[in-house]
Amino acid sequence: MNADELRALQAPLKDTYRSNPDAALITLRTRGELDSSHLVCRVDTGRALMEAGLHPATGGTGAFACSGDMLLEALVACAGVTLKAVATAIGFALRSGAVSAEGDLDFRGTLGVDREAPVGFREIRLTFSLDTDEPRERIDQLVKLTERYCVVFQTLAKPSRLALSVQSHD
Image (cartoon, rainbow, N blue to C red; front, side):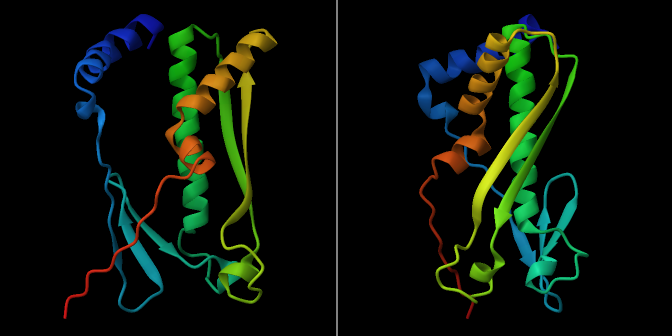
């Protein structure tokens, strides 16, 4: 896809969202089912069934996906797609590339071993490896725009309100 094709694809959407901002508000949903005999939550991704379980550092076997890994995978996927879209939109000459993420966890917090240890990632690092002859200014522009428009990156950088509710079936 080239920049003109991308603009043609997105132009009607942008026009709609400018004239009717409410049309741009979309609720994404996902659902998981708890397994009755294993410490597993089955999440239907729409493409495959993902079984998430405990990380080996918390007593898991490693046979199931780790939700922390899934978070990093979502970041990599979003950042990669966003980078490709931005590169296409600005005519950035990108031969190939890769995206990686790594995050540091202290499992003492998750296991309740140390109340001072955080539960969750202490730090997440996102890295782009790009095969391009573009000058540094253009690379910096690409990365700045990717960071700005990547939904998962922005959600992690500036957390949204988070609510939890319980529905009990008595």
